[in-house]
Structure formats: C-alpha cells, structure tokens
Image (cartoon, rainbow, N blue to C red; front, side, top):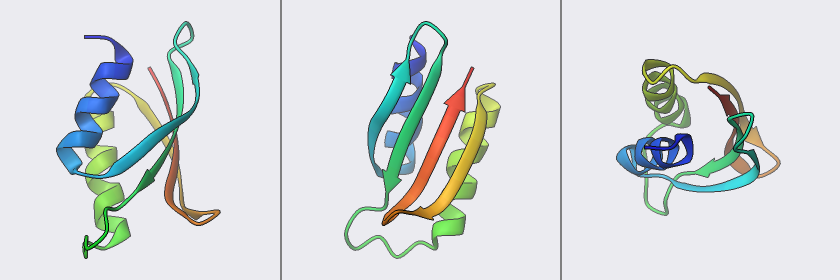
Length: 79
C-alpha cells in the first residue's frame, strides 16, 4: 500500500471530505484539506483528535491548523 493509499484509507475511516492540495510522493509529504460532511455534528477537535491518532499510529508526522481559511482542518503529513 502506498502512502497516498494509506492516507485515503485513514480519512475514509474517519468519514470526512478531503482533498490533496500539494503532494510530493518522492519525499512522502502531503498537504491535505479536510472538511466534515454536511450534517456531521461531531466537534472539530474530536474529529481532528481521531484523525491525528490514526496518522501517528501509522508513523506519519501530523501538523494541523484548525479552521484554516474556511476549511475545517488543513494538515501536512509526512512519513
């Protein structure tokens, strides 16, 4: 499984909407914008905590900004 596939699996597990903004597959660095789905009433901090848990368990670094430019979470992950 590639890093990108693992990232997609994690984000699909948490059930959020996401898009890759900037990626460098060679360096294994990914910038991702994450939003909760319409009707998702989970607190943003709880969603972020769950996502962060999965990424750190998969040995990714996780540097996030909450409520960044209208997006729920703007994150940079690196392996």
